[in-house]
Image (tube, one colour):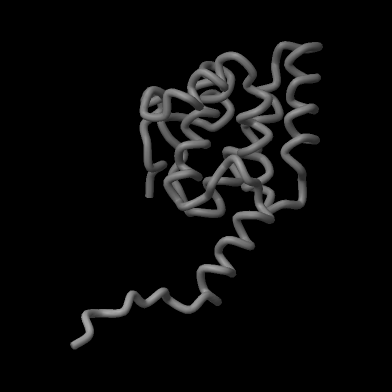
Length: 136
């Protein structure tokens, strides 16, 4: 299988595109929290990404690991090339693609892992709402 969206389809989600261009640590933190299934917080991963980006300029050495983990979780092919090269050459595009792919898989990227799991549990446990029909 392939990632659901193309690498250059950033404008499919213009709000995320702007956020990622202005502050990629936010998008990375959101992706990292979902990919790590809540074991790493959005804030801690985003902060670490920001520090790496600020001091080394090469946060791609870190971010590509989460893309690889995402591919492993969903059995996705490594394309258009090696995960490291995608993040090294076009990190903002890769972050947007990872974000869109998780969003397309049903995750609300803004609420984090725990809230997504709570939402899924409520969806399974809730009784359907039945609207009464016409009465005579």
